[in-house]
Length: 98
Image (cartoon, rainbow, N blue to C red):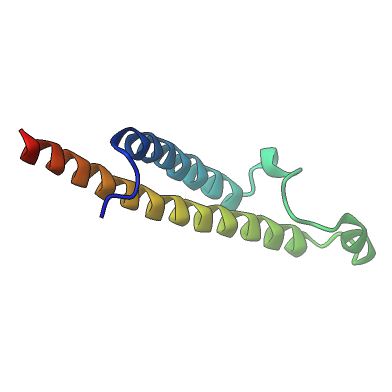
């Protein structure tokens, strides 16, 4: 059940690990309403202005952003598991050949 080579599986394992770490941190920072994410939140400013700039809309947008980061981190984690299994199969096959 090997779908990619040993170098590809290691590369994807490292990139997926970095993606999980980065997206988890971004999700945590977005959950605590970090100001650095103010330009990245999905908020329609004209609609927000019409409603009188409610703080709840801003909090909801930050929560949506953090949920999206956590979902993407889960997807990266799933890919990391698949790549780890691929690496294990390659490692096991190389020991059986010798």
